[in-house]
Length: 111
Image (cartoon, one colour):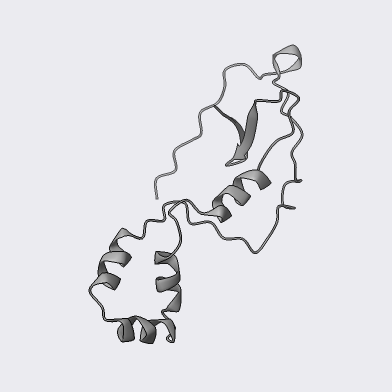
């Protein structure tokens, strides 16, 4: 495997040049657990398949290990779980109409 060295900043950032990152709502590693996020959820294909099935076939699916597929199709594409995940990554800021989140360990501004 080819190992490419990481780029190095020519001059280390120190002192007054440092950017202060706001305190997090949850400490790193202390975010709520047990909530999974499916950010690209779209049930169009699942709905298309379910529309071609009879009611008794859908009921059979509901009673099988594939019941979650039917459940996904009944939920809106923007999941409340995703919103909960974003809130758990939120940073504390003083401005009322400004929202910052942690993504891949780095702060990003939602605007």
